[in-house]
Image (cartoon, rainbow, N blue to C red; front, top):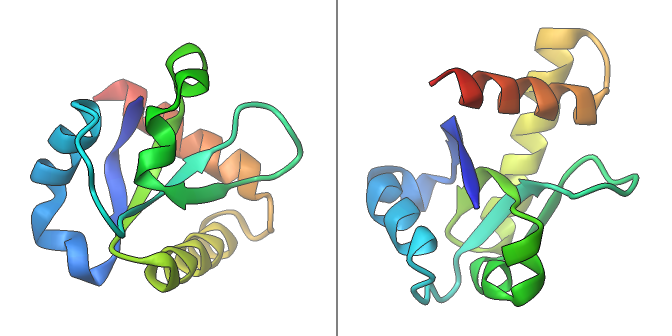
Length: 110
């Protein structure tokens, strides 16, 4: 899995970013933790899931871009809401997929 350089983080995980990213890369269990990703293909602009879902073999072949980490499902939904607000502020539209791709481009530069 790949991570953008400036992840969206839920309030409960803000001080744990390095530890969480390290554990995600090592496929360690993170009970209750959710990730927000840009989906591989499809029409959905963003998707969120329990972190353990990323350890399935499908994701080994289709490496996702993680753009956010949350401490629980409610926090993941709140982060998606924040991403939508940021998209509106920065682009003036609801082109979430384009905005998310611009986050990926920023992640590739670092």
